[in-house]
Length: 232
Figure: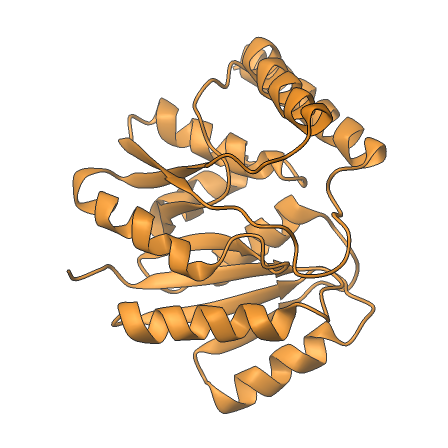
């Protein structure tokens, strides 16, 4: 099957223990499955040796690029930078912690002939009750406050040109960025298709998302999104 040209965007913040394996997996997938590809690693202000590792890969493989923020700006800001720098027909955001491997794209890419955006949801992650309840509460909050009701977790493959059209109106700097741009696609009448994917534990280190301060920041962004939506 022929797949469209694809930019793999890895969002990295202090992932020195993980980034080499993640890039090995990404390059192996892209080389085997894609005719035209590039990998962009967006370093969101790391203070470890992760950027140096990415530079070593970029020196050996010209389709790998490093783009750096001068400070930690947040996941949404890294996503924005990835879209701005993407050169190919489609892009996908991938975590630099190894939780979702590039090979999972083999489940999404076959959906594209019949849709504009290929989405994913996680298979059972074996997470505890507390994490499940937190995830459910956040989905309910987005639906009630922001009117966002589509199912999405993990990866999505999105047309780059449309994302660049939407980008000036996306305001989030957290992972809510993805929900905001996907809702814009819904509002624009773009067609979605969804498939389950596997999410694994982090290769090393601790989550930088699941903490109270960041969750409160996301909640504020959902509320600000609601106010902008009502003001239109």
